[in-house]
Image (cartoon, rainbow, N blue to C red; front, top):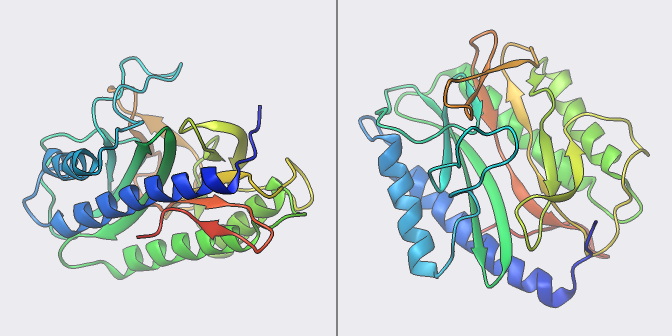
Length: 255
């Protein structure tokens, strides 16, 4: 079931989105050579605690997962695309890091992700991150009343494929509101004019996941969560929660 949100609900989701934006900014600020992924999770936990928010990630267990997710961020490094579990791994010079974070505040959820490099960046990583950001921006620009989810998917996919990057097969964005994952599913590649109609009040998490080597497939780590590129190349993941409004797309996970 798809719920169209009222202006009051969008305002509440905007507050949850601010918490997510703050957590991501603090995590990126704390990331550096020698810092562990568990350290970054603690940074995000403290932001949520101070805001009076809870994590929709912590304890989340979809049907594919062997265990509940044990952290408040997903921390995916280098060839890990998404769903990385924070552990004792200490960041190294040149690592490409993707952090996904959510928050629930007053019953409403926000969800966003960033990708960045640690220490001395590789030019190819900067290009991958920039293209992922441009794919997200293209998807957001297509998130207007009268379009369909296929228009967003087509916009995202066109940017990725033009740059000859892969798109994580079987994964994409989603509706969001009272729960982190709601209908409809939002692919990262598709045909314009197809899919669920975009109406004012619909809120979507738009999240391109691009793979440098051009492949779409992935492997799953023994932890049952972390998805890695099959070709060993690096990946980037950037996400915003976006509301469809009569005045155009409204990003709810900005600072």
